[in-house]
Image (cartoon, rainbow, N blue to C red; front, side):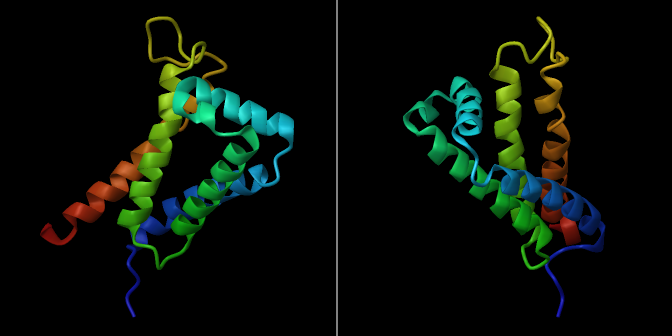
Length: 141
């Protein structure tokens, strides 16, 4: 039986999957203060999230991270699917970096000290796009 992943994808899938899964598990059962902080930052960037209660947002974020982390760790999930999920998730994080005041130096893409936490997620976007491109161009497709 051939798995739907390439050997070259195993290491980044394991590293990212474990990192994201851990992040999601750490948010599971978040207290009110943590949920409010997560929600506050997200709704500043994405105003439509204002309608979601902080506790519900934290639960949804946790579940999403757990699902994405597990998808990357499970070899039965095709890399194209995992890459698409990773690219979408990291795009949302980078959107927060670009739109949240104080994350970047004035007139620049360079992060401030506070912005490094989100700016580092550019590597996840790079890996996600790399997975997608690799899968779409594999075998002359």
